[in-house]
Image (cartoon, rainbow, N blue to C red):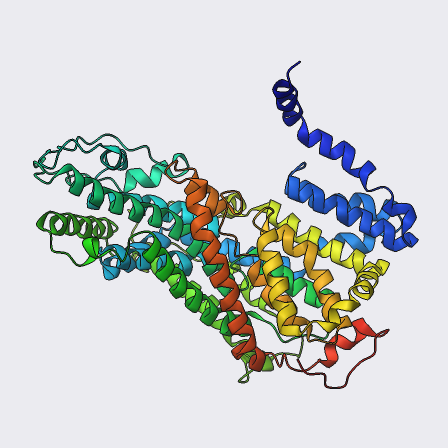
Length: 596
């Protein structure tokens, strides 16, 4: 049998082979290390391998602690199972439910189109508008949902600017037959994204098809401009998923790794109350803005958004196309009609949700939590209260005349959100994944594995903390290119916390950059679901994402380094070793006020 045939057959069953071989491959850990630490490390390595290879669904791997930790005598199940629904999971759940109500009534679409009407249709400004809108929406919605909504909007606008993509590709490939050659582009039907076809239909280009005009430019001129336009199109395809990933880091509920950080802090450092929704936003939002600006400049530069031919050079045809694109955006916004009662109500509760979370305990001023017993009201309580209201608040404006009108409709009122819709919108696999991470962290702590690993990392104490922080962030950002960002941070955060404790550095100085860095996966289609959606359009190549994403990763690392060493240092007192971190490091030699 040929080697190629064998390799194909092996690939067909590679997941089964990983499931069978991995436990045998790492079995020496059970006998070569101290008993409890070795068993715990064995389970952690198994789970890390299964997560990275996706030999099992991520959520199924996340449930393995319930099977393995009790049977190996590491932690009893009655102590392990509650880790799967800590208050952090409820905070995440409340954010998802609120997001589903925003999507249910189309508020996200209204926000997106309004921003684009303001941004204009010049390539660089339109890329900025797309990135700004995507990042803002992904602060509250999932990154995947944001990308799936924004891509067809971008495609529709670009079609009105440059024509359909297939014709544009043909112009780029055309050979030069002479300077006087005339090309009449013949449009063909563009293949829309399969996952967002309904949105594509909504953004139809009805009425936008003008009579074809003969293009009297030479083939060389047309090809040159078509190549510029093609680069801009690719820039749009990559800027949306990148901006969604960046925006998700700005709020605690924006992406799962942020919540895992909170859960790990509560598990490892119960006395730590430094980070909540408000303090995280105060740190991460400026970071998001800086990275978003740097990312926009790079993408616009690389993909032709700053090209003088497209931005500044006068061209009647292009002016007409830009006017059509602007008209398309404005027309789609007008089709939405005025803000209805349901959208107004959702907007109110959305703003109320954000304000209450920001002001509960912002640290720099007294928050409203002082009106309640200390330590009783958390961000989770706030989130659940707001989303509970959505299930009974009416979606139609109440009217007293309805009671006096016998002819009025007696159909039951419809609330802003139904449980059926909320249940469909919540990714329960992510909830389980969060729980699996918290269960793993609890087992590492109880078994002594975290302290054992930290002790073996002691030589890193000789590395300056600032350098160590950059190395940790860079490593996590690279690792998350190949694995889920949630799984990545679950695996490494306990080790990072123990490392910080052993070298007497404020744990937040290492943990915050690592958490943010785990969301900076820009180089490969498999890195994040938003990247996959953009790549699935069929108009991007891997090299396009690698070329853009490599520099994006560097810009992200520099942005995080700047943030953590400036306002982050002052906000979280990162230049001192805090009292709340000392219980984890009882065996180590403490410095009363060790500085970075």
